[in-house]
Structures are given as C-alpha cells and as structure tokens.
Amino acid sequence: MAVLLEVTGLCLALGGNSPKTLVNNISFTLGEGKVLGIVGESGSGKSLTALSITRLLPENITMASGKIVFYNLGEAVELSSPEIKDIRNYRGKSIAMIFQEPMTSLNPSMRCGRQIEEAILAHRKTKPAALKEKVISLLHEVNLPRPEILYDSYPHQLSGGQRQRLMIAMALSADPSVLIADEPTTALDVTVQKNIILLLQKLKESRGLSIIFISHDLRLIREIADDVLVMRKGEISEYAEAGKLFAEPSSAYTKGLIACQPPLDHKPERLLTIRDFEMAKGELPREERKSNEIDYSQEPILRIENLSVNYSVPGGLFSKRAGSFKAVDKVSLEIYPGETLGLVGESGCGKTTIGKTILKLIQANEGDIYFRGMRIGSLRSKALRTFRKSVQVVFQDPFSSLNPRQTIQSMLNEALEVHKPGLDLRGRRDRIAELLINVGLTEDDVYKYPHQFSGGQRQRISIARSLAPEPEFLVLDESVSALDVSVQAQVLNLLNDLKEKYGLSYLFISHDLSVVKYMSDRIVVMHAGIIEESGDPEKIFHHPEKEYTRSLISAIPGYQYSSASTS
Image 1: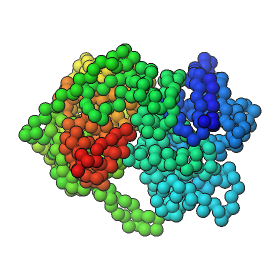
Image 2: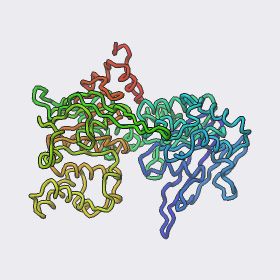
Image 3: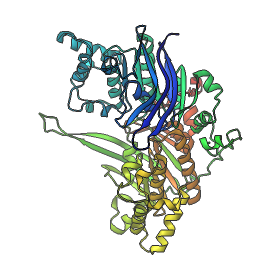
C-alpha cells in the first residue's frame, strides 16, 4: 500500500507566557485509497490534528514539533516546513476539507453554483463556457437533485444534507487526492447521515480518494474506516486496523467509548461510562432493566387531540402572497404518569413543534392539549403559572439557553423566586445545594458561570434549573444530541435516576433512534407532520409496520434486522 500522508511526532501548543500542550506526539499514516477514522471526545485534539495538516490552526496555536509529509505524485512534500510559502498550492487543491456545519462555511449571499465556480477558479484556469458545465457535473456526482435549479439557489434554500453534499462538491472541484471530513454528519438525521457515508464510500471507489474521517461516533467510524486512531486529551489512546480494534480493543478508553452508546439488542439497567472501564468495572455483568410498569388504565398526565400547527411562509421578492406550511397535521397521543414517551423522526417532521406547543411557546391552529385534565389553551394568569411550574423543558444546546452573565446560583435562585415565592433565603440556598448535588455537581459550583463548565456539566445545570419548580412533566428536546457518547451516557443515566426519584414523566424528543429505544416506554414515529406508527420500542425496532420506520432503523450505523421478521 502506497502511503499518501504521513504525520510523525506532531505536537501542538497553545501560546502565551506558559505554553500548554494540546496535542502530544501524534503519529499516523494515510494509505492511498484508504479511510482513516479519527475518533475521540470533544477536546481530544482530533480537529486540531486535521487543521495542522492544511495549516489552518488558530493564530494562538503553534506546531511545537513534528513532521507532516505529503507524497504528491511520488514527490515527498513536507507541509509542516516553514519553507513552503504558499500552502494554497496544496490546501484545497491536493488536500481538501469539509466541516461539520456547512452553513458556517458557505456564503449565504452567494448562489451555490457561483461558490463552486470560485473554488474551481482558485486552483485552475477554466474557460467561462466550461465552468458551469463542470459545476453541474460535480452536483450530479454528489447526487444532488435538479442540479440546474440548485446552481441558481442560495444555501438557505437547501436542506442540511443537501448543503453538506454541496460542500463535498466544492471540495472535489480541484480533484484532490486527500479529503479531510471533520464531523461531516454530526448535525444530520440518521437517514441523511447514511446517505453521506454511502456517497463518500462511492467517491473513494470512483476517484481513488483517501479520506480522513473525524467523528466521536464509533459506530459510524466502524462503517467507513479501514484504520482507526483513537485520541484522548491530545494523545493516542489506540491506533489499529478497524476490524482488529472493534473486535479486540486494547485500551480501557476505547472499550468505554464503544460501551457508552446505548445497545440496540437489549436494555441494561444503566449505561456504562468510560469511568466504569477505567475503574475496571467494565467486565462486570450488566443487569437488564426491569420493565417500567405503567398503568395505562389511568388518566394520562398529558393528552393531545387532533393537534395541527401551521407555519406561515412569506411571499417571494416579486410576490406578496404568503403561504402556509402544515408542520403538525391532526396528531393525537397520550403520555401517562411515570412514562417516557419517545418522539422520533427526521428534522422537519414536527416533533419539536409538538414540544413547543405543549409548552405554550407556539399556538396551535387546531386541536387541544390537556394536562391533568385541564385544557391548556384556555389557561390564564395564575392557572398558567401553575401549569408552567408543572411542565418544564430541557433544550438541546445548554450554552444558548443559559445566561452567560449569570452565575449558577443566580439562575437557580431566579427560578425559585418565580415558582417558589414562599421560600426564604435560607430555604432557597438549601434547595439550590440539593439540586446541584442531585444532578452530580457540587455546592461550590454555584458561584461559577456557564463558560466555566463542560458541555455535559452545562446540560446538568439546565436539568437542575428545570427541576427547581418541582415539575411533574419534562419536555426533553434533543437534550443529549450535542453531547459526546461518554457524556451522553452519564446524562441518560441521570435522567433515569431523576425520573425514579421524583416520579417524573418525560416527552423525549430525538432523531437518535438508539437513544430513544433505550430511554422510552413507548415510541411514536413521526414523518411530515403525521404519526407513522407507535408502540412498544422492541416491537417498533424488530417488527416495524411502515416502510418509513424500516428505513429509519436500517440507517442506524451497525444495526441489522431481518426483513423477514417485518412481513
């Protein structure tokens, strides 16, 4: 196997009076026509390692030592050498890169076709007559529908998956030999994610591309990678051929990463974490979770009847006629006391709209929602405040839902002042301490600000704030989707503990089917504003009735089910 890229002893440091090592002694090779998977938690240094290859590191981070060699048409080029004055001869031309969020990489004010043309012209002279033809050809190659129309479209007019395909087309415009894909599917639905993986595999075969695929999802890495580099805290935890690494992982950290994800074939009582493996608990047998006995003969805590929600669509530049889009179409469902109902589906299916309507953050056009038998649409003043005390929410991104200027004490104190006005100062302090301890934080954390916590800790703070009024019902809207698998396992265990301790009921909204299956007592599958099917998680997964549900399940990395069992 010919080596195309070789990284040896890479060390990256954060500058300042006392430099801090961020990446320490990283070495790996990328073979011609191969896929190298780099996996690790946030902060492990995997993105910095990739950025160092194309010399896109932030100004305050320097390459302290090491060597990066690119074998370009048989010639060894040391990309890390200061003697290379114009890295653009290689960056984008021979080594291209696509990032996690395409909307931050695309110009929102420029048409899609023009953006790809710019990328082509940056590296090669092309006659105007052939330029559009080249762009249309690239759009066809990445399986984008109606390339002629997309050529004149703006990025906001494309879906998330289409925008990522557009970024891939742009990266391919100069015919590179290496493609670096940095978390290219993290923000995408499972079906779109699978399509992007299939596209990259196809391009690898048709173009002979070599790919560095960065992710924190080991199941996804297993689908695409030939070799795997596991990183932790800036160092190599394990580096091996993919088949060997997944069959016989040698490090406790790798074993923990694999085990952190909710299993698809059973439901353990608790999810294992990396800490469990490092404390040698990973080999202990895991008890199966006992079936949560829900009394479905009692009155539901929440009932939705024929709910419809429309969004207005503004008119175009030359038309003032506005239209409407039906986000939720006559949906009915019930959630019972002590139950976790999983609401799953692709982006745009209406699941978050249902959550927001329950919380009275948006108004329904038709239908009714009842909480404890009360119609929430008619609630006003005191009754509405009582409802808001009983029904709370935890959003996907804790950093955007926490006030960066408030300490944790101030946030929790504010929630208690609104919903627990009878508590005196001492009572509020005791309640805040109790909340923090219950979510796995300490009393000393009350004086800190959100930026001083990790992503998982910030989500714990959001959960503590939602528990402050002592609610009965929580809407969990993609509350673990932005977290690493190891942190996700901790938060899912915490949510189950809190549910047991406080007798809570959950509406668990997610596009991650493995997480929904693990957490839920029942699952509702939504598509295009309607309910496709609902029922027991095991039945939904092993005997899905609808083709849409089967397509969702089959798109889960590493999951296989017998099509014969679904007939």
